[in-house]
Length: 341
Image (cartoon, rainbow, N blue to C red; front, side, top):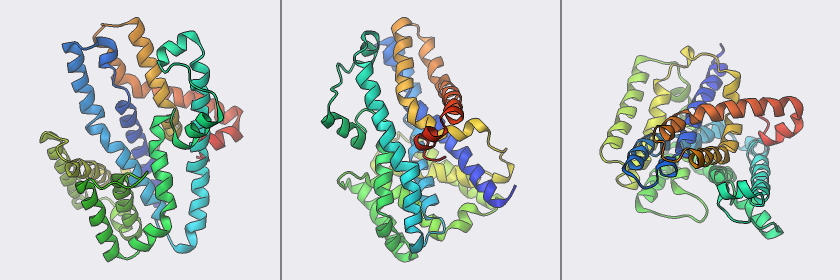
């Protein structure tokens, strides 16, 4: 396998692992099945460990991969090309899926059985609510990530102007991290997302030899040290402060990347190429499945844990089957919904 193909294959593998983590983040179900019981608290503690500690590395990992790929070999003359490709891969799916989710909630809130499970009352069907839903993801909550990513992409001229020189770039990263420690807020933009994205962008501009270099024992040990440090923060009564959380979420994905020998990774399977589509559809399906199961099997304590653990497999199966069908039967629609992936 060529070096570029190995790099892309590694990106697909990491996207798949992070996608599984994201599904677990949104699959908590102990209280739905078991109410406020002691069993529910034990289930919640287990699910928090996977979804709200380990799983919290997933979104920073996605921010870092996005930032690295955007600035990998970036030059001023590539700005228009990069923006144009992100219109197709990020902005168009963001708008389309927000509209689809809004219409789905409008219809579902008017169907007797479905509206009871949704528990949102009758969703208004008017222009104001529609525009709000499309632009601000009000019925597709997981798209906060794409909302942040769109803003980060628009900041490319500013970020590149700062990050293109190693000294100013390093100073910028220090300022961003300091801002997260101090709880500085920026309207509409998460400062920790800016830090993750900027760090990876810096790597794409100045650290390609480190990020894409051949695997070595020394490289693996460096990665293992980062993962060990992230685990130490996690076990030391995490989350602690904001700074500890950001460090853990940064060092974990970076360490795993350095530890992984891309030359030994199997070629990614077809089902692993539906990660973006999985991200777009999983939230509503996870909630629907959990709420429906809890409605019929309330109090059956093994089920929430089993369902939680298997949820990524269910979502992968659904996304692969439905995505394959869309790709085969409505390729133009699929192209738009999946951002040309």
